[in-house]
Image (cartoon, rainbow, N blue to C red; front, side):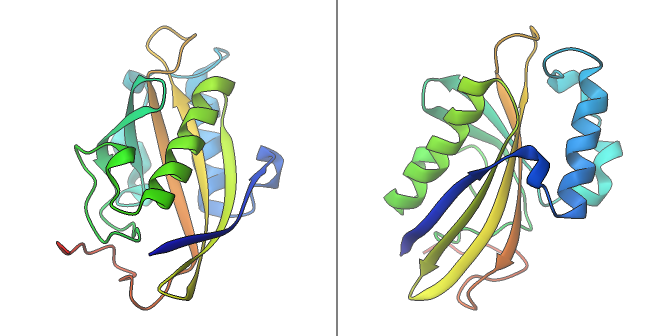
Length: 167
């Protein structure tokens, strides 16, 4: 399963992927001077290039995150669609713990967070970056997260298309 090699939180200024930079710039425009935008401010039609590579996550409580939308072109070590499931529901407990921790950091910071993750899946390198952007109905407390991973190295055992299988 998933073995964590390194997990570094990077400053937002370290965003080095053009797609993530555009997503962060979009989020910044949508917050319009507020600490963060709300879900109603995010227009899926304006995010066409990101479709299939985004997660929309409900924040239900401390360390309690449910995927409202799980990007169809995103892979995970469990090879399953997580839509409607909790971050803690990954069968791989190490991956679940890391993901939950990243989302909680975003909630606690009430600000975007950017991570670079290096791990192994079935003894093969698995490397990606994840940008988490907070959303809020009230403008003060995070009630949703818009997250986007960028896969850098994906083991051949994980389909690059994000097609999930029931294992």
